[in-house]
Image (cartoon, rainbow, N blue to C red; front, side, top):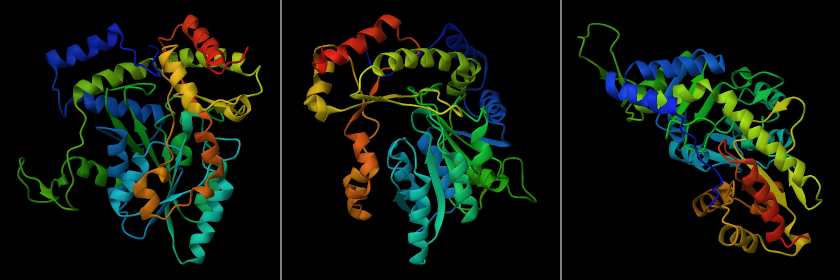
Length: 386
């Protein structure tokens, strides 16, 4: 079976983890500190908090920003549901906005329209969470202008985009957003197995988040013993990441450019093949966007080819032993969000169109050219294209 994604563990990765197991602290040690320092350098920001997952980073940020009932947070429905979950868990309202017609991220015009709609109802938007889908940077110039005009905090869900660049800058995320969310899940460009991070230049929010990661503990400012601590701002929970995981992350971060280069070579093979057919649509980036290809989404005109996506998917898996994936089920389609927030699917024409036509193809650094060519040819066969 060719899976849609797979992680690569090198000999040096194994050596780094083994060294930590043998000689270092495996929790709350120097390797965690080193990983946070290296991420700060990579993203060119002042503060980094490594946590147990990208989801944990979102929840920690939501709690640190004190989101609560009647707060509104704008986000794309076309991303993993953890963003919507973190907002709902905080008590705030996830406000879904459609993607661009010919893009993958939030449409700035629709974002502005939604802000003005809510303003008329005397409702304020507290934050915009913008996902760089598949590794392709969003329209950050326009999103930033909107956030600045309406005094709204801006969050970059950068979980897909480690190593992407915008206008040639690999550290673009912190230049546009107030807060960055990262994930190091096993299918991401670098992995710690499970893991995530919150990055920011906001010291106050960083300190709150750090306390929340440690059950809410914080040392009193005066008259405390070396063993003493207090819960000052409210309870938290344990979402730390072990030094074992961080050792793996540190070692993979060193070679992230090499990892991305391999994925971009695979993406180029796909591009050159599928661009020759008018019933396929590939991801296109502008000269200002450098995509790190966490995903390779391929849109297929199933109506024109007179085949259902279900039949196509099953044919690829059962006959050709190739696993495709859907990214993503739009968050508003989940029963909880649809009912609680009274979402009308008809308001998301562009997201629905992508959801009903698009699959993610296998893309990872160990995928061989021979396998990529096999995938391309198998797709044509499954679609019964001569």
